[in-house]
Image 1 (cartoon, helix red, strand yellow):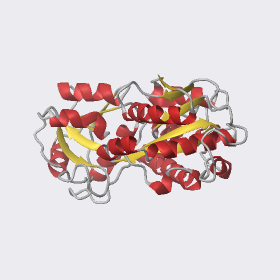
Image 2: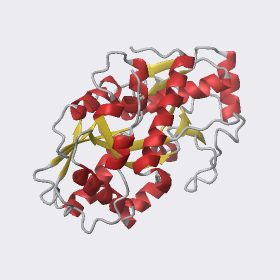
Image 3: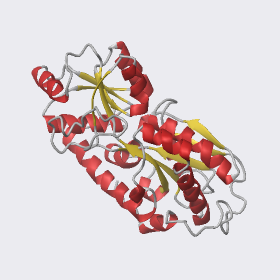
Image 4: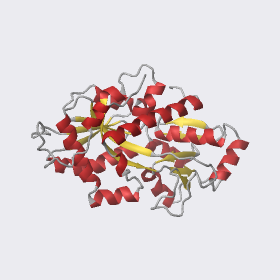
Length: 330
């Protein structure tokens, strides 16, 4: 499947600073007319679910409506994405997704029932940031270098979990393995939350996952934090090195969560939503939580043409990881 993020979508997600009021754009004066469903392609507890709930609490009141979370896990998030792509384009059914169903699925599923570029219009990037690289305390390693040496000595013996085949955690770990020259065993789950529970129980040995999923367990001593995946250290975790500075040069992986509407959703509705999410992002309570989780989206990428170009680049980059790692559908 060829994935092209178009200029038409850029116009639908352009800057909306000139809009005088959130829902009083021409053609969107009555939006929303009923509760808005935010479909999340993973179970409760994962990063997409967390950000969907965080923003829904702010966006709903701003638009004078109610935003309801609808968790629809399965098939690496593609069930939720497919449902939104085929829903009525009126702004009342939206998708909150990471890369799995947008930038990865087209490379893994040749018979995917939707085209992310043609059928879904990005509205706003809700968050983007580092993954936490965590291991079970029984694994005899305390640094990235020690982990790489251990895995090289025991090829295929170290197991890692992810939120599903083709999920962000899966792709991040495969990229790490490719650059490190190691081979590990992938154990896919239906969401990061379930994978972390098995990691705590020792059924698997390591994960790359969102900080909000892992950090409470790290603080409780149930998991060991080795590094973060952004090139620089994270401000909220200044003592934790990056994978890059730990010896695996040029490694970087940015986890992102974006909200989408069906592609033919009227532009005024998209604009009202984009403005509402922009205001929510800067609300002090939301900003504090994003800062704490190191999930503040770069201002240059939150909407419009820059967001579309970012998605195009991510689709190409992650497609290369899929090919180089030989990832297949399961």
